[in-house]
Image (cartoon, rainbow, N blue to C red):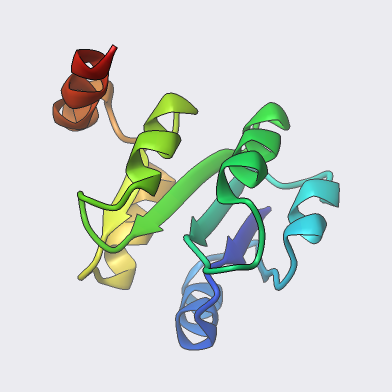
Length: 122
């Protein structure tokens, strides 16, 4: 089961039409209660919940996350990388960019350029 939780109704519907065995989700609690989820497609959503805590709980359930971000400078990128979320899609994107991530997880070498600055901080 692939859960779609982007906060963008148009994108949710398009992804749902394109991705087999998917379900649109509107509440973070539902994601955390879902027993069959294998992948979560999500984006940063203002003022709905503590994003870091939510992603930590999702990762503790061993759910793979595909994260949609506005750009490489978004502060949530650091949080995602620290939680082992490497399947990143940056705006602008096409639906096929997300479906490709579902089919093939991102290799570490593809995101290592984002890891280096985090390592330099410590």
